[in-house]
Image (cartoon, one colour):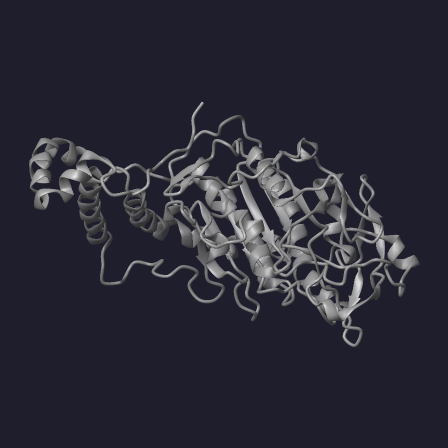
Length: 480
């Protein structure tokens, strides 16, 4: 058994070395340095991204995290509620108008504007606005009982990504790569492809894929949607490969001397590896990110030939190429609150679905036919759901709902065609097999062979973890 425990807090006089360095104007360190000269000369910087074994046999090796920022309406997409049809226009007795975000805009029950039909052998109901994803329900595991206690977008985003409502905590992708390292030493272990479509980054920006108190090497590498995907990806024209290699070798020697003197400095070790990774990426990243190398048939499958689906399709196809090449975690957040439909939902929601439906279905199909779905976990969902009642009767929409919403997962050791949990007859509250974020994160870590109690990092205030001391259970009902 092993526990992830990489570093101690940088406290004053945490060691005799620190005491000698700060006492007597540093003369004590002079004597110590001579004693350690040989060790300093031969010290080797550890590679924080080196592959590490899981705590137990893993089912998943990589993640493609499709994040629908804004809160998709579960009662209009995946969670069919015929009672909304029967009681359309009625008032819900005892409904707390403070359930949503706009307490003064609560209206009556609203039926879904869209037809639902059963699909697949599992017979799961899917809205007509997802015609392509509906064909793959037998590959998916649905959770209809998600619950969160954060009714505003920023803290809810932090909750689903990091497990905490406050900034400064590592996200799930950082924890997974910290625990397991990377199978590819030539590409980042954690890649983010944000899809702005003119609306900017999700609230919280890079905090959604940040490493928090973990070493910075584990944060997500964000690819820009326009222009060069990564700054300085290509070597300057006036610098030869030999010159660049000589520079990096010098940096490495100097930094290793510093690491020998500061064995607990994880940021310095991360910096050394960052230089080396950037150099290797210049050789491999352009090829991995070039989806035009794919056959035309595959590009059409992802909808790259269609202006409506091109942006999401490109990212889904690149995501498949990245996990194929050993990238551990790929996150694709949509533009800022694209699924936040407080008004005009009847026209706006089908547009969002159209942009992502065909490419997402293609991703699941493509992973399956390449034999990658067994070890690649695909996630589709947002930070919350929507209420079953009308908000804003002049411009009809749905307000926030954190008491019950839906996500689906596919591959990575999950039961295919499985339906877990349920909301009440209106889709308002989760009432059966409720899953909160701690349960959800514990389950995802389990699929990677990581135990939540053992995946820890020593910070100044004590051991930190993704669950961070909260009660959580692995939802075994979801496991294949």
